[in-house]
Image (cartoon, rainbow, N blue to C red):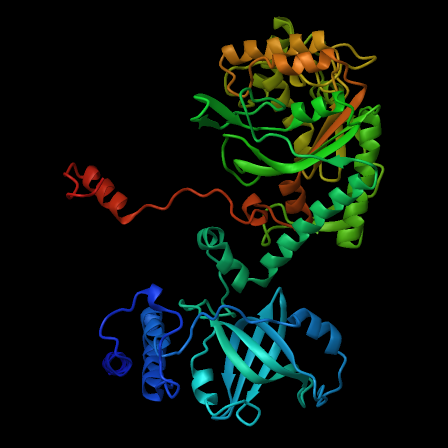
Amino acid sequence: KKAKKAKKAAAAAAAAAGCGRRWPLQRFGPRAVSSGARWSNTAAGAVKEAVEVDPTAYRENRMRALQELPEVYPHDWPTDATVAELVDRFGGLPAGAKEEGVEFTVAGRVKSKRASGAKLRFYDLVSDGKQIQIMCSAQAHEGDDFVEVHDSIQRGDIIGVRGMVGKNKRGELSVFPRQVKLLAPCLHMLPKDYSGLKDQETRYRKRYLDLLINNDVRKTFVMRTQIVSFIREYLSSRDFLEVETPMMSAIPGGAAARPFVTRHNELGMDLHMRVAPELYLKMLVVGGMDRVFEIGRNFRNEGIDLTHNPEFTSCEFYMAYADYNRLMDMTEDMLSSMVLKLKGSYTFEYHPDGPEGEAVTVDFTPPWPRISMVEEIEKQAGVTLPRDFSSEEARQALDDLAKSLNLDCAPPRTAARLLDKLCGHFIEDRIVNPAFIVEHPQVMSPLAKWHRSKPGLTERFELFVNGKELCNAYTELNDPERQLACFQDQASAKDAGDDEAHDIDYGFVTALEHGLPPTGGWGCGVDRLTMLLADKNNIKEVILFPMMKPQPTAAGAAAAAAAAVGAVAPAGVA
């Protein structure tokens, strides 16, 4: 009976509104109506009832109802205050007090709507994460269209409000409006507040909806902004100059990673999206910019998992006349200060397996331990490794050790790849509190300077927290001859099948021949740092629009189904 009643109500609404068909979205906007044109109570009530009984028809019924309004999308609504400003300014008013004679104009989205009889309407208005109550009465309303105006407003709509500010008798801060205006309707029924939006696919694909429904999501991205701002202010206050370097280049470099390839039509050549800005930044140091940094996007054509996204944000800085020891001290100071400011303590809890998993306590109190990579592997494995890691003898020793531990290492099983697996097994996976892994072998670090006292090793460090790398830095290699030799080794590894190795960048070698001063270089993954401080174990939670697999279309699904049974796809289906 209810279904039949809903159908009749919808039909009556359509007839009353003159909508015998589904109205296209582009018809919304100012309409040429007479000055006496009014919202039809019959149509409004019928559509409202139909929506409540049949929520699947919400969009269609709402579109019909909105056609009766003289204006749906006004061009502007000049505001003179924000919800946050009203909350901060008048939050201390006593219950029942009002700022008589002073009107404010604000705007926001309707989070909830309530009614008390025919002459009172209540809204919870949200804007920029702040909320205030709108207490509408027919007595204060300008004009005689109180019911019509408020019947046209639904949960999720964006409205403008003009009125006085005060507190009701229960002490709730409210705006008591003389005018309420619909600025932009929400044509879709939003999930209820008490249930929230839980489906991850929907949350990541429709981040706008995630932000509207789940309040904690906004806090995550506020934290991300605070992290970036802290890094920028920290470096700028130490005379670093922020710069921008190319996103595309003929030769990728600066990191061992597989690049994305794009095409420049005018030049008729393939270009690579940058995997790191390192080489360009060091060329700026050659040019006399002694302290430079860049916060920006990098692109790596690799897998997607809990800690990797094909495009991600990093900060890299380069400091002339500094080495990796000074950079370790700066890293300790920067990140421990950041944690203390943003978290209120050096110590905080993190849930590596998600909010339902067990929490671990992470302590950023400096100083942090410094662990020599090769020496720690030897200590944990009870072996002594050859120090000439470019030799077959050393590679074979590493291979034998990896096999004895059943460590999976995809070919080519080079010394660098085997060392990375062994380091993960013996060191990285056991780190909880911040710790520096230092003195990487030269074969793992083609851009790092050789260690001044330990042959075969480099002056490099990686900062790990809870088993994940946050920072990577080293004393930069500034000998052009040695740099060319390292590039040649990388080119050989690429020829052997290592798709993360790159060709020789002769332009960078030429830049080094002009003289790169002793320099320390540093890089930090902003996404992973945000994951840690925002207590998220999935990188998609800290990227507003993460990379997602495309959803299958109806045509694609039909073609796949036809192929599965060996049938011919319907005409017109690709």
